[in-house]
Length: 414
Ligand code: GLA
Image 1 (cartoon, rainbow, N blue to C red):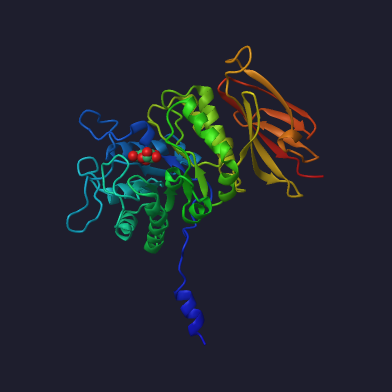
Image 2 (cartoon, rainbow, N blue to C red; image 1 turned 30 degrees about the horizontal axis):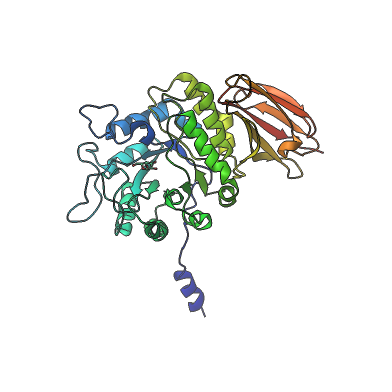
């Protein structure tokens, strides 16, 4: 009698990802856009991908308040490996010169600061920078090695793998991670490499997925990624939610090329689309006003909103776009609040690079709760703009290549 349920239980095959992680979009830091694949620590001791960069960053995440703001995952991107596996065991090896203590010890150090530890890998033959072996033919071993090292997050790239190998490899590595018993966030680059990604399949196997090309340190790169997102937003939002997020790549705030306004823009839109907030910068040299942006608690709360519903671009009028996300709190009747970002892409009208005034009724944006909404400026939460009803006109003035960003908090009672 007891045997049948027992058998069913023991034969249960976990097909999808089963880690209970990334209930809100992960936040953290990753070196790639800023530090690329610098491996020459003699000439570039501060910038090379090394134990010392990671330890310095871990300390700064904590001492500069980023960890308290939610930036928890310290993820080492490509170029951490030796060129080949261990001859005898076939295990992956971290670079002897640049990570002399090894990954287990580095992971312990990261954990001792209350942070979480992430590593890059590739599902194919080699990593994208061709510096180390990919996971091909070693899924079980590599997942177990990561678990032994205390890894909490795996960024799995897709270079040097065919589309077919990816379709088999991404789910298979996820299952190998499940079998280790150690919960690890699974970040997949799978859709980026596919001509026709199957997002329902990807969302079943990954906690987050890269859908666009690598971010660069420029307004153009940020707006390209935004365009790609808005052009596919129905399918992208359909499959994202708690534990499953679209990844538009890293936050480039704090580097060289984003103006203050473009920095606000990237942060606001990444929060609207419920993106992972993974910085790539040198935390030692981030200017104070950018650090303040990165640690803006109200915007981080929008990104991490428990409803877990990613937003969309709902209106585009000439060079102005309006992006809207449903968020908490809910009214007594279950109607939600909204985060609304107004983007000025510049380049239009008699003064293409001037601030621009934009007016719209709330109802045109889909904000229809009859009792209305209290409006707060998310970049300056002491600025309470008052009560607006659906038919009211809302006016905002947006800097060129910039954004204004508000929370429309639904009035709780009828
Ligand atoms: C690809 C990824 C990047 C980075 C590099 C490392 O280009 O998209 O995010 O990980 O590989 O080689």
